[in-house]
Length: 526
Ligand code: F6P
Image (cartoon, rainbow, N blue to C red; front, side, top):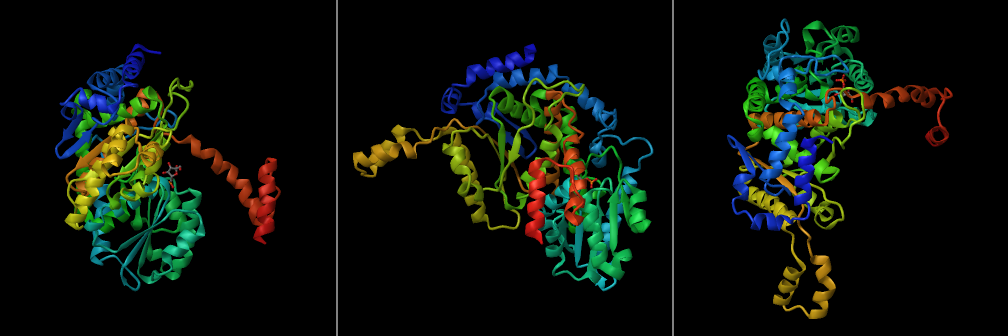
């Protein structure tokens, strides 16, 4: 173990047994010391089980791991995605870095935003009139970004209705188009490779569903221009991007076309500007005050120093309901790795399991376990200080609940407090003795709160870029390549022979369990 890791571990050994109640009692200035701002964005780490000295040890770890040098190499367009020999330049899509010479990012952006505006204005229309509906067909990074952002920015949407089809379950397409008019629906096939099984199967379904409208009412977003042409999408409706944009980092490219049709060119540019503001901060702020760096390091503290394997991501914002799913791909596909950049096994745990649902709904489902279960699950709360188009009274209810959950997790409720309260309520002693253990909250459960003014396009862009850079920093410290995803390949390869086995009974070479299940499917599916 390196000295830097040893210093982090020593800090953890010092703090592990210190209750958050005592950390707060011992330092009245804790919030000021452990929360950081970038304009209206605040991140409060004071409810994490750490202190300023622990943060110092984590920053030293980031320095020792060469985070700054790797960041600068990424920004300079070096092929930091080593296994695929590619640059990682999604920041260039929003002016946060320079694109490779010859790749016309600004012109490409103008072109797809121009198309988006023409669709919104009805200048590009279907055979039955201006488009009333847009269906984006894509999966993973070609779906989750637009679907998440379209939901998050619903108050900014005034264009045609947006729909998203991702799953190869035919029900997804069928249910989505059931009420749509094919003469007034634009279908956008979004796929970096234009070979993804799910997307191509759904694209074919869409082409059949559009029938005679297909040629005029399909568009594509891809790096595989020849594939789009072979599928029959006219060149004028194909919007390209570049192999230096990873799928899960591609919302900023023409993959955001459906979103741009929803929120307009101005809204889309504001989203990019928000991300660019975070890029600038990430590139310029010293590690000690760098928000994505600190968010990453607190994650490393949780995962490696404290040994907690999952993170609950809980937006107190119904419009961010798809944000946990978006971050799941961003984080788990990037840092769910077991070998280092040089192919040797990692020495520490890497990416945690990320999961979550919006609050307050989550309070009424799994928060019981977070408060009184036997595992510690750190929570990331996300909230906007003011509502957009919602009732202001409701917003106070929402935020009060968010803050209360952080309090309850950190401070809990001791047995003595429970007993005193029950006594004050006049409860008999035998009932107090019987119920107090059940009503006690241990507390000492960590959370981070990410707070900003309002969920508009700028704030959303900045929030996404915050998480992108967090993922980068964690990957750099763990020494993994955050920009490949070989882990999804094996399942794809194994599905091939099974498709044939299910379709026409071709015998599949498979293990006894899979053969047994295939036989059972054939029997039940007859
Ligand atoms: O799940 C693997 C993956 O390659 C993701 O990284 C990607 O976002 C998704 O599939 C879709 O790929 P494509 O855009 O090429 O269809």
